[in-house]
Image (cartoon, rainbow, N blue to C red; front, top):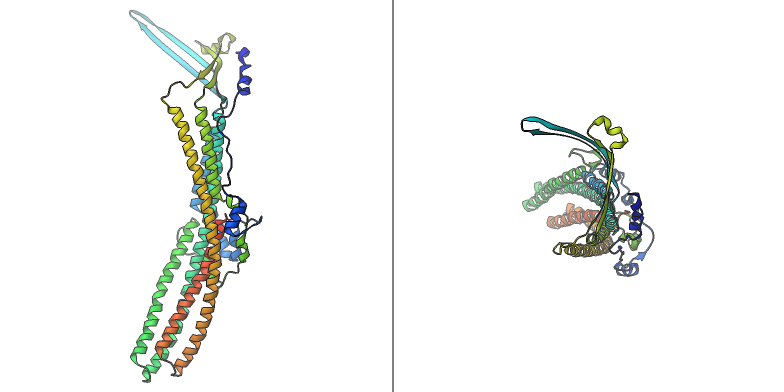
Amino acid sequence: MVKYCWLIPLFFLFSCTLGEDYQHSDFWSNEEIAQNLQVENKNSLPSVFWYHIFGDENLNFLVEQALDNSLDIKIISSKLQQARYAFEINKADFLPMLDISSSYNYAYAPRYGELGDKDSYFKLGFDASWEIDIWGKGRRTKESYLAMYYAAINNVDNAKLSLTAEVALDYVGLRVAQAQLKNAKENLQLQKEIRNLVKDKYNAGIADNIALNQAEYALNTTQALLPQYENQIKIYQNALLVLMGKVPTDMKILEITKNNMAEKNLKFDLRVLREIPIQNLRRRPDVMAAENMLIAKNAEVGVALASMFPDVSIGASLGRQGHLLKNLSHSYNAAYGYVPQVDLPFFHWGQLYNQLKSARAVKEEYLYEYQKILLQALQEVSNAINAVEKEYEKNAALTKAVANMQKVMDSMKEKYAQGLLNFSDLLDTEQKLLQAQSQLIESRGAIYEKVIAFYKAIGGGY
């Protein structure tokens, strides 16, 4: 066996890795993307704690709890462990394997009219095998599983980003519903005052029952809003608890708070929208996952190509064997052997060639998928930038509208008390005020939601 050992380094000398190495493609230049998005390609990266800009400690706590306890994160993390073990398993396929084997064989063969023959045989030793990776099939397989492992890491990051955004969105929805409930109750109190004023005039004979019925109608309509907002609050509370991996129950930080973020405008520097690093968009977790899957499929083309070439393997055994167990220690019972083997695919009805063409088609599919996800990322960024800017414009107009309508309401309420105004005019103004206040609260919440969408679109620091 020793005289053939010189063949091993010869195999490595003439070995190669079949298939093309992966070549990264940007599809569009950073300058082209920056021009189309109308942004400056800055180098500043967002933090994974981007939600801290909202200045809400309760939200910060909820996000941390969700990231620690979310069942979705635990599921995707388990898939990451599976990908890691798959890589460790498959990278060993083309390494030398060594097994310890032992056996005992007992046979009895009867002879007619005579005592039968008995035979015992013991065997103990090592078996070694090694498929030499001449054509790079093993190296390409390792490359493929490593890329899938990296894709699994990207998927975990993407799940964390999505979870953070979802917690933030549900929390904003909760605070908006609570602000709407508070606003409805305040308007309900105002309408009760107006109803009492109309009732006093009705009892004094200076107002008819039409005005009184209108006042009662407005009061009942606002009262009907309360169960709606209370139901929304409960839905958002349960959603947040589930995201944190908790059974739906009461939680103090989810109750109505004095410092409700939805009752004030978010002070956000709009210049941040136009100062984003383009390269960071290419490194979004979902984009990176798509590229790593493309790398894996590119490597599988090499695996399919290498399968069309001869497989070279070496098997060997070394041990002791004999008829008596006590004699296995003697040197004359030593046994060994080796089996060099070459397997050459000869006639497979085009199976191997079609496997190669299939692998190339799959790679092409994942190339287009990667390009599609990158394009969608750019679209989401463009939409998010525009949405934040336009919502701030809408919010500014609504803020002025509420302020002006409040002044009108105060003036008309005073005039109605003095008998200088019809009740229908007062009622119409009060309903418009309630509508404007509700729209302003929704706009404040929408600003938070669109800023959340912006940070998610640019990768959220991952």
